[in-house]
Image (cartoon, rainbow, N blue to C red):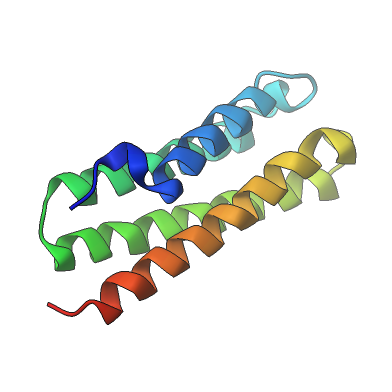
Length: 120
């Protein structure tokens, strides 16, 4: 299997986590502790679950962790949409993070499909 660093889903997920976490450090979002915490947890869970699944070595375990990462990415996207709905950040400030999140969902789905096709 390839190195973890060669997986686009993991490298994009790390960048997504940095960007989303960074949003929570800006006003007024940083004052909304519960929402900021949820964003942080979901964002950091994406690359962490990819890494965990990769380290477990077996295809079924990797797929299980990728599904968890996908769930966290979908959760993060929902939280980011809520930030926009509540007008806690300007749309421009969050648009790039939302786009990266959408890309992450696509990368995870593609990786899971690829692993499913490659068989046991």
